[in-house]
Amino acid sequence: MTEIFLEDVAKTFLINGAILPVLAGLTVQVEAGEFVSLIGPSGCGKSTLFNIICGLTAPDRGRVMLGGRDDVPAREVVSYMPQKDLLLPWRTVLDNVILARRAVGREKSAVQKEARELMPLFGLTGFENSYPAELSGGMRQRVALMRTVLAHRRVLLLDEPLGALDAITRTRMQQWLLEVWNNFKQAVFFVTHDIDEAIFLSDQVYVLTPRPAKVCLHLTISLPRPRCAALLTDPAFLALKKKIMLALQV
Ligand SMILES: Nc1ncnc2c1ncn2[C@@H]1O[C@H](COP(=O)(O)OP(=O)(O)OP(=O)(O)O)[C@@H](O)[C@H]1O
Ligand SMILES: [Mg+2]
Image (cartoon, rainbow, N blue to C red; front, side, top):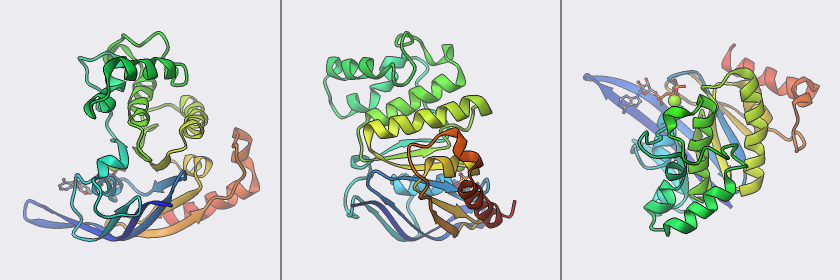
């Protein structure tokens, strides 16, 4: 089943009377349970595309189908972790992660119980009652990710969820993210600037041009799973990396 199908999606913004073409007709497909990455230069329109998928921004043209339909509200299908983590500073970790479930009317004690059981998987045991300001950057990202996963939608949109981390923490978090993905089997559409990360995590990678963005390369990554760090020096991995570097002209 196709969870996200975008066909010829285009968007232009008007900034102080000037026309800014951002998306120049993108066609992208994410199948159920797949991990798909989107990589492209800063400012090319990746977050704009996510905003269009979840209905926050209207496209100028093109088609957006979620779960095979174009008439379902995005919130029924996708859960969005925006680029900037939007944790509520006045709520504890536990209260932050259960927000989405509470918003759809689930009973508090049941969602709290589920969240407590999942704290070890997200490395947050012992911090249930801490406030966001008391956490490290990596922990805050895990809280934001846990909230997104716990919404129990079929698709997760993750906009640079590991962006603020140092290289060592990031590599560990990539492995961990694959564990979480294995656990929940949701489709993931993932924005990153990091070529290794895109290949390491994904089943498919879409590479975008600078603004106005077009898909300049679409790769299927058929490297075996589970994936481990040794893969980063594998010739097949390096060949894929070279293709993406050429497409990005880096
Ligand atoms: N609501 C808006 N109104 C006007 N312009 C916007 C709006 N949202 C985004 N833009 C412009 O669209 C372009 C693409 O922005 P976007 O945030 O989608 O890029 P991005 O690929 O996510 O960049 P980054 O990798 O830095 O996060 C930018 O030039 C930005 O200024
Ligand atoms: Mg962005």
